[in-house]
Amino acid sequence: MIYFDHNATTPLDDRVLDAMLPFLTTFYGNPSSLYRHGRVAGSAIDAAREQLSALLGVQTGQIIFTSGGTEANNLALATLAPQAGLAVSAIEHPSVIEPALHLKSQGHELTLLNVGTNGLITQDAIDKVIRLKPGLVSIMLANNETGVVQHVAHYADQLRAHGIKVHTDAVQALGKIPVNFNRFGTHLMSLSSHKIYGPKGCGALVFEKSVEIKPILLGGGQEQGFRAGTENVAAIVGFGKAAELAKTELAERHAYLLKLRKLLEHGLSAIPGLTIFAEQAERLPNTVQMGIHGIDGEMLLMQLDQKNIAVSSGSACASGQREPSPVLVAMGIEPAAAKSAIRISLGKTNTEAEVIEFIKQLTSLTIK
Ligand SMILES: Cc1ncc(COP(=O)(O)O)c(C=O)c1O
Image 1 (cartoon, rainbow, N blue to C red):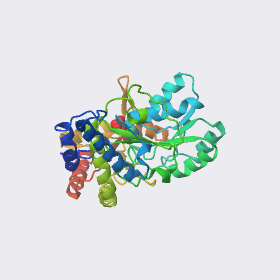
Image 2 (image 1 turned 180 degrees about the horizontal axis):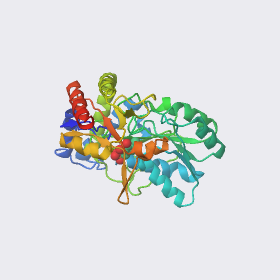
Image 3 (image 1 turned 135 degrees about the horizontal axis):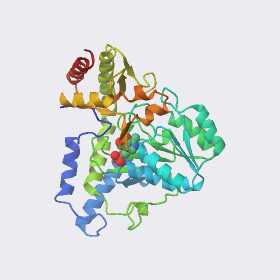
Image 4 (image 1 turned 90 degrees about the horizontal axis):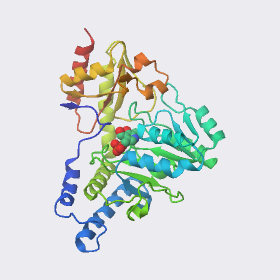
């Protein structure tokens, strides 16, 4: 199979699996237990926290392990939004949009920040939100569909100057571009393990110490009392190992993915009627979202699947009706063009030969 859907999830790195296995077998103790068997598990969590904090340039006490990016986003919004309404960009992942809509249904003011056709949040949107002064602004670092990288440091600077708290969903950016927490200047940042060759069901919320976290899961005192529940030790160990590898291999992965993406885009440029969405914007080195005039994205996805090639389409199914991608619609792309979208997201184990084979198959399916 040619797997080109790494923004959906990544395969587990063998080295990550090796690090995890002892905690699924021999060392099954509860990290809260005081005897040695529990302390071994507790120390493994401490080590994982060190590994992740080294990747992000933060102190270990600034990390809350969660069940994934979704929980980290929910925790971020629950922590900051209730103070004075919230604003989120129109292209956020559903794990930000849905809790934002939930807060709105409970009476909190919700503002959506617009983006331009290049997928970037406009200065007008930032100016407007500064006038509104919400308790929280949430702006993703990199978009899961287009790969567009937002100027988060620049926005956070302006918002902070007006006393507005900022959260960024860095789930797609982590491991693909440098993600140093302090460089972006946000108060909160969400991360997920399974996008960086770690296990699914594990993530983290990183927080500036001035922020008073409001837990959404109540119970035991795990994670400084901010996230109750017995820790998923093996998954956290895997996330830590994946973070360590992402740190040491980041430059190499970035250069390799960019090389593959350029090869891919060169091949795509020969296909008539093909558009790469947000082509001119700074994008993740692994992501290309494209559409071909007159060709339905989901149909193309199914045809590629028959050739054993896995990509994703931008459309979402709402009440039995296929809707164009809200991200592309927010960018002002016509619904028909948005419905043609497919997303190719490359990974570190993909090869040039796979890219060439993909172009060959795509060409034969779309040029009659
Ligand atoms: C931008 C973004 N945020 C959040 C998430 C949710 O992360 P998780 O799958 O770990 O809940 C995803 C997953 O696709 C994502 O792409």
